[in-house]
Length: 315
Image 1 (cartoon, rainbow, N blue to C red):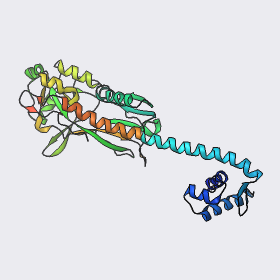
Image 2: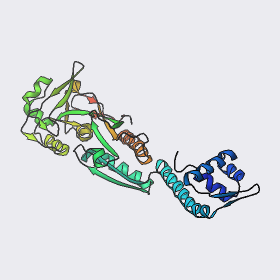
Image 3: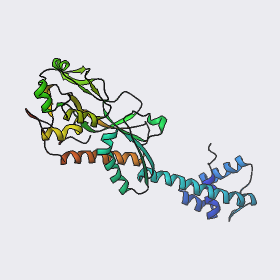
Image 4: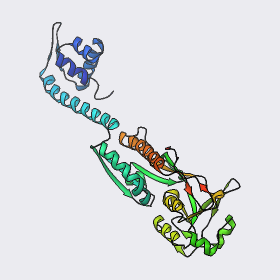
């Protein structure tokens, strides 16, 4: 039996001056109300109400207990209402993390739009290329790119992500264009954060360990080196989309392009997802879709028009 049992019934009887009217307020039977008050008095070992055939009145102990119970019930109801508001209206603090470049280009502008619509919300965004522990570090949400490792986290797909193998025309004029995966070992590879490039061959995933004289853990830096003709690079579509259209880069080995990975919203396992996280995920899905739809159709390459993310779905 809960220590709260009988409090609502006692307060209703005291305020209404009648078990019948209290029962009507609480939408219970009179016998239920009477039984709950009697059990409360038994637990407290104190009489709270004088009962006669005509009226109900408070004992001295009942008068003292009533004021305290009214405050308790009021604060309880306010707490429940506040929780309900949190579940329907974004408010309070939302902590999230995302990779630096993708976050700056795509995620932060959408989060800022979301904040403008919900002034009760506070947001802390940590842009980092490290994979943070959401539970240990107290994050509500992470935007992650590529393939996810198995974990206890929940993931919602926001958009696909395509990877392109590229090189500048000047590099290809000097060293030639690779026509198969086996020829990649003859080329200087610009290595970023990953030690392995993924391709597809004969319907299977084909990993390749790039080797070269240049390495940096920044996608922007890899892109700059590729544009300068230093070597081959493999980068996500959002880095190379514009240079490919302008002819500053050439897409290579299109037939071996790996299957699209994805952009994910990742959050800790919870039975009920808060309104601020749930609604922000919806905004991110919609915003990424609209951004893609505003992009020109297709990525132009030296030999063909490879599909861009202009038609990427939102989830």
